[in-house]
Structures are given as structure tokens and as C-alpha cells.
Length: 82
Image 1 (tube, rainbow, N blue to C red):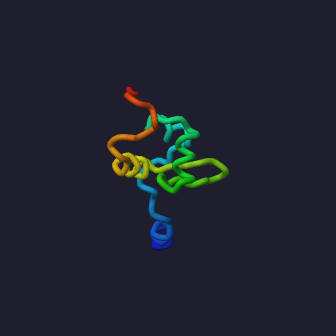
Image 2 (tube, rainbow, N blue to C red):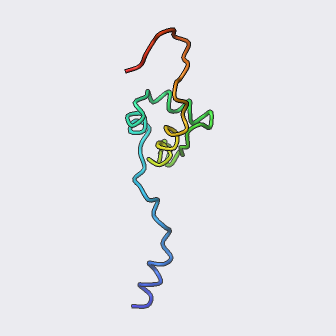
Image 3 (spheres, rainbow, N blue to C red):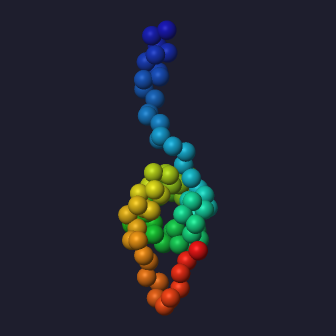
């Protein structure tokens, strides 16, 4: 019995929420996956490559959204998003 308890204690703490793929992260943010990768390269969004694929935590996506400017300037005059 004591060895089973010791094995449980040696296991790493869980991540806390399910990791999202690049496509899922883009869907959450309602962006193109290329745009998400651009924000990661700029260091504005946290993401990791695990097993050759991008993975994102929902908490990082929420933080990105919360820290984003209220209005994005894309250079289009009078263009309002959906």
C-alpha cells in the first residue's frame, strides 16, 4: 500500500485544462491559424510545440484576449468587424 501512495505523489501536477490544437485556438479567438502563429512568433501569445504540433492552454488564450487593445488598427478606414 505505501508504495502505491508514493507512486501517486511522484506524478507531475496536471496542466489544469486541456491543451488546444492550433486550429482549436484559432477557432476560440475567431482568427485564421496563420494569424495565431504570427502572434506566437511575436511573443504576444503563448504556445508550445509538443510532438511537432502547436498546443495552447485556454488560460493563455484568455490572457491574450484580455491584454489585446480595445480597437485594432488594420489600416482600413471605416471598416468594422463582425
